[in-house]
Amino acid sequence: MKLEKITRRRFLTGISFGLAAASAALVSVPVIGSILVPLFRRLPEVWRSVGHVDSFEVGKTVPVVFQNADPLPWAGVSAKNAAWLRRVSETEFVAFAINCMHLGCPVTWLPDAELFMCPCHGGVYTKDGEVAAGPPPKALARHQVRVRNGEVEVLTMPIPIA
Ligand code: FES
Image: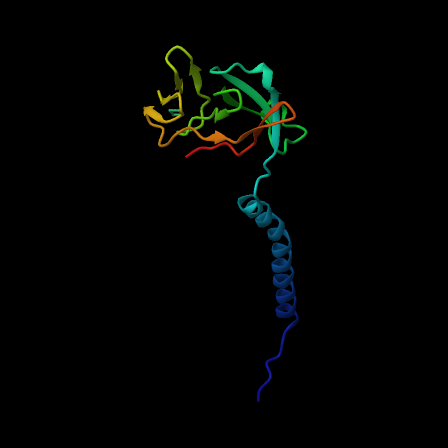
């Protein structure tokens, strides 16, 4: 059996490549992790109060603003979300996501027409949030709503875009 002689140059080249590979692995693990972890992380859902029950009139649809589930300290106004809240009866509320299901523009409630309108591409929704016209592929998303201790609460959710 013939043993190959390892030269000093070849040995140092091998060490260099080995150290470079180890450095690349050390750097890539946190980078890849920071990209992949948000894809699999379940966003927290939090109940947020939007006002006392008595401040909502039966039959009216009004905008409500609430804080996101996990706002970052530097998020500013983007830490807030909004919904269209309707008091259907003395005990029943429904909350529509404010974002159009097409590309997420905020929809507007037109009380006289009883329609939600999207200003971006002309999407139209019925008063129950079903698509009436335009490009939205599906009905407005709805937040869960409950009443606790006299307060109307809305369950946060990620921005719903189809
Ligand atoms: S974003 Fe609403 S119709 Fe396009």
